[in-house]
Image 1 (cartoon, helix red, strand yellow):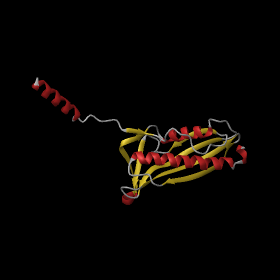
Image 2: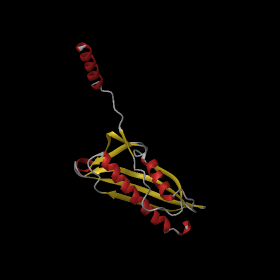
Image 3: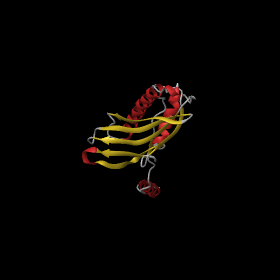
Image 4: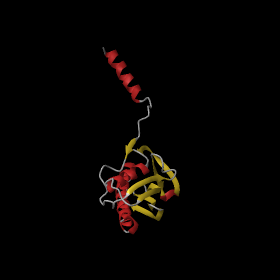
Length: 181
C-alpha cells in the first residue's frame, strides 16, 4: 500500500513539474458603462495601429528606454484594445442613433513605468466625425491615468479609468459639433 501511495505521489509531482504552460490571465476594462453618456451618435469603426491591434498588453520601461515596447507574459487583454474601447463607446452611447458617426483610431495603449513600482496608463487616440456628406471634424487625444500600479492587473484598472475619461472628453467634443445636434 505504501508503494502505491509513493508511486501516486511521484506521478503527481512529475505532472506538476511537467512544464505545461498555463493560460495567461485575460483582463478587460470591466462591466460598467462610462460615467458620462455620449450624445446621440452612431459608433462607427474603432481600430488600433500595430502593435496595439492584438491582445498583448504592452508596457514601456521609461527609466531604461521609453522607445522599447514589451508585452506582459502572464496577462493579455480579453480582446484587442479597439474592441474593448468600442464596447465602452457602445455602452456610453446607449446604442443610440444620431446624425453623426464616430470613428476612432487607437495610436497608443501602453502602461508606462517610471520605476518598478510606479506606472501610468497612456491612451492616445484620434477621432473623426462624419455626417451625410463625409468626414467634417477630427481631433486627437492623449489621456494619461496615473497610479497604474506595478503589474498588468493594476494597469488594466487604470486603463478602465483612462477610457472613461476619454469617453467623457469625446462626449464633450461631439456635443460641441453643431452638425451632430
